[in-house]
Image (cartoon, rainbow, N blue to C red; front, top):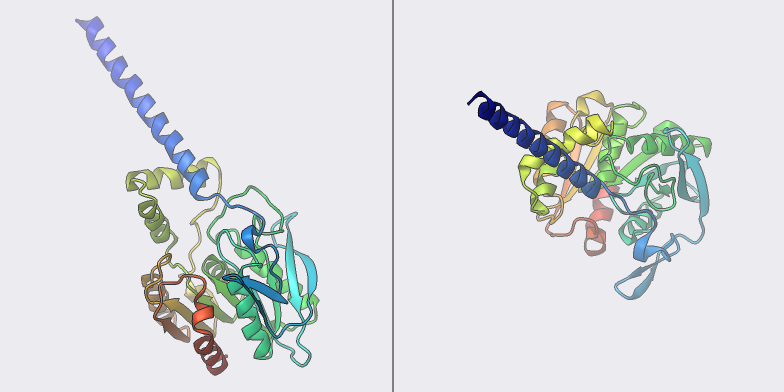
Length: 310
């Protein structure tokens, strides 16, 4: 009888160990899959500040020349690939930061660069690490928790070009907005931020991504544990909501009311925290389902909003 009891308990222990190991293996695979970044420029490799391909048409804007400039991230041994567009009469510059699995070649990013340039700004746009033509560290995204170092590197690049910190403005799209808002918590020179289609709470967007991919939520905590502790990877460890830790004096928030990728409730939450932190803000809510490409449909609204509040 004692032998059978021992065998039964040993079986339970073996099953438990196998179950835990299987859970951790599945969580590891999920982490690798959902955090993966594809470097390069995809279908947009031929785009430049001079011209873009959009729905089979070639569009051109006000920029007639640009410089390719490499510069350093705050991360060690990371070189970022950038484009600098010099405005003939302006001493102000806008830094444009793209989102997850995108690059500076994205049509919407170049279109917004045209808008800023036509409104009198120099422009610096660049590829985040692991994206585009910048250094690939590990091919994963930290959802802004590591990418913010690149934003601060871009600020230093602007200063090296001769721009005063007070004349540097920051535009971020989606994860680029998150990276910029996190950077503002670490660099108090960052005071004017245009946030488009940003997510808010990293844990919320990650859970929504699990649901979108139809992955059971009970695997979420294990995946984050694996990422943060086993791989020492900071995904989701920093939030753009800590606006009370910034010196932002002008926060412009742009979001589609029916955004099909990052829901409008994320900007609602960002606005709530801006109010609590007494951060001055203005918002532009667009009647669209687009996440990235709203600039093409709402060019006039963008120009009016930016011209009014910058």
